[in-house]
Image (cartoon, rainbow, N blue to C red; front, side):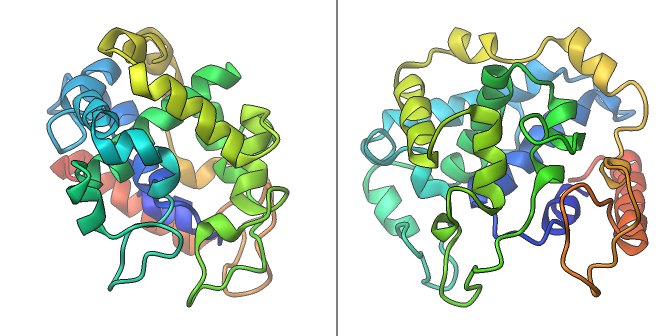
Length: 256
């Protein structure tokens, strides 16, 4: 469900935003599952599929690799030996870091940090098409990506994912955002992380209805096989159907 929505935007996103976004959505909607009573905070403490988002996030920054390289190295996951401007998983492990703790858990905390810093809600981050409040639905894809040998970090600061992110964080460059986040992350306690999370009452309010990412924006349905995707367009009927089907599967099986 989450990845269908993300990839429909047509942008070459950093892995930490894609995988962190998926885990963040899991935490947002966990309590809506018929078999689950796990709260948003509980998901950060114990969920995420790897023994706890907060625990793994702190483990990453406690490692030599994590404390030295921070969130930036989570922009691209190694794929068939290609690492772009990143590092191999082996290099991360030599430095004491578990790769998944960077892409999934640190990415999740980074999204919560962004939402808190900008004084917006998770619902706005996911659903708003207003630049400076929403992320996914304000994306205008950068046309210059080389999808064969390029990597997400090559996106200019005023294009694509970087433009939408910086409009929210108010930094001049993504490097400035990384520096601020890393400085906080290196010393963040469990209490510090919990303090940036939205309250359960706020989450309950945002997810009281159908939190349907396929109807997140207004406008004419977009055909991804036709013209270039523009900011503020809604997803195509095909994507909407896939998302709806995925939502049913998730609700019935509880599987991500």
